[in-house]
Image (cartoon, rainbow over all chains, first blue to last red):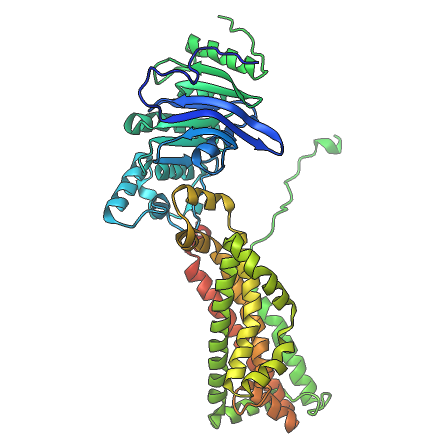
Amino acid sequence: MTVTLATATGGSTTSPAPAVRIRGLRKVYDGKAVLDGIDLDVAPGQLVALLGPSGTGKTTLLRLLAGFERPDAGELGVPLARTTVYQEPRLVPAHRVLRNVMLGQRGTAANRAAALASLAEVGLADKARSWPATLSGGEAQRVALARALVREPRLLLLDEPFAALDALTRLKMHDLVERLRRRHDPAIVMVTHDVDEALRLADRVVMLRDGHVSVDLLVDLPHPRAITDPHLLAHRRRLLAELGVDTPEATP
Amino acid sequence: MTTADVLVTPRFLGTRRRSRSWSLLTRASVPVALLVVWQAASATGLLDPQVLASPGSVVGALRELAESGQLADFLAASATRAAIGVSLGVVAGLVLGVLAGASALGEELIDPSMQMYRAVPFLALVPLLLSWFGVGETFKIVLIAVSAVAPMYAYTYLGVRGVDRKVVEAARGFGLRGFRLVWEVILPCARPNLLMALRICLSVSLTGLIAAEQIGTTEGIGYLVSLSQQYFRSDYMVLCILLYALLGVLIDTAIRFLEHVALPWRSGVAAR
C-alpha cells in the first residue's frame, strides 16, 4: 500500500543538485529486506523527517547514509561533510565538553575558537570545561549538536535526537534546531517517532513501510509553526491514521 | 476509631550516614583487637614463642634489622626487582590486551595463545626459567614480569572490550580510526578498567616476587624469609609477613592516588 499524499518522490528534479541521492537502495537482514528499493532525493537545506513505527528501516536508512552499514544493492550519494547526532549524546566521558566538541580535530587555536563558538550557539559556552557526566540530558544533547555542527556539515543526520529528553526540554530543542537551521542550513534527515515533532520541524515527512516509501508528504508551511494551524492539524490526522492511530475530529 | 484512621510519623527506612571518624575507628578495631589478643597470649605464656613470636620480639627483630641497615637494603632490593619486573609485565600485557580488545585481527592472533598462557600457573614456569636464566637477577625480574603479564592482559582486554560501542561508533563517524581512535577514545574510556587491571596485576606479581626471592638470593625480603626458616626464628618469619603486607598496602595506596589523578571526571561528579 503506497499512499502519496503529495508528489515529491525521487523524480523531483526541479531543484539543483540534491544533497542526498538514493536510488534503488536495498538492505537485507536475515533474509528479510528491511529496505527494498528506496528512491529518495533530499534537496540542499531541506529537513526530511523519517517517521514511522519501529522496525521499518528508518534507522537503517540513516546508518547507511552515515556509512555505518553497507547497502546490499542500489546507489547512495551523500556529501563528504556529514555528521550525526544520536538518541544518546555519545560523549567521551573521559574528555571535557570542549574536547568532545573537538573530537578527532587538531587542537589548533582556530579549531578551539570554532568549538567554543559552536558551544555558545547552543548556549553552553560556560560548560566548555565541564565533564560530560555533570551535564543534564538536554545539555549533553546540545553538546552533541554543537559537536555535529562545528564541522559545518552539508548533511546532518539526526537519529531520534530528542526521544530521551523530557517534554519541556524537547520543545526547547525544537526551537534550537530551528535557530541553528537558519544559520547553518545543512540538509537534515531526522528519524523520529513523534508526529508532532516531525510536523513542527520538517519540510517533508517520509514514512517507510515494507521496505518502501509509503508516504511522502511536503509540509509547505512557514516556520515557526503554530501547533494549532489547521493545515498542520489536517496533516497530523492523516499521518496518525496512516500509523494506525485514530484521532477524533476537532470540534470547533 | 479503627487503626486505618490512625496517623503515624513514617519510620525512617533509609540508611544512616556514618561519621568519618567513627568509620575509621571501626576499621581499626579488629586489627587492634587481634594485636591485643596476640600480646596477651604471648605475655601469659599461652602462646609458645616457638609457635608464634610475641609482638615485642617482632618489633625487636625489626629494630635489629633497621639498625644494621639491612632493612633498607632489603626493601630497596625487593622494591627495585618488583618495579622493573612489574613494569615489563604491565607494558606487555597492556599492549597485547589493547591490540586484542580493539581489533578483530588482533583478537584472533593474540587471544587464543594468551588464554592458554593464562591457564598455566606461572610457578610451573620456574624450572624452565631457572634453566634459561640461572638463579641471578634476570631470572627474578623475568619471573615477576611473567606473573604480571597474564592478569594485565586479561583485564585490559576485558576493559577495552567493555568500552561503550556507541561512543566508539560516534567517534568513527567523526573520522577517527586506527591509532588515533585507540588513543583519543578507547584508552580514555577504558581507563577505569585499566586501573583495575593494574591493581589485580600488582597483587599477583607480589606472589611472583616472593617466589623469585626464595631462590638463590642474598638480599631482599624473600632472602629474609629463607634465613628465618633456616634458623627457625619465628620473630623474623612474622616480620617478613608484615613487610609483605606493608608492601601490599603501599601498592594499594599508590593505585588509589593514581585513580584520583587519572579519573578526574569521577571526582568531579562525586564533588557535586
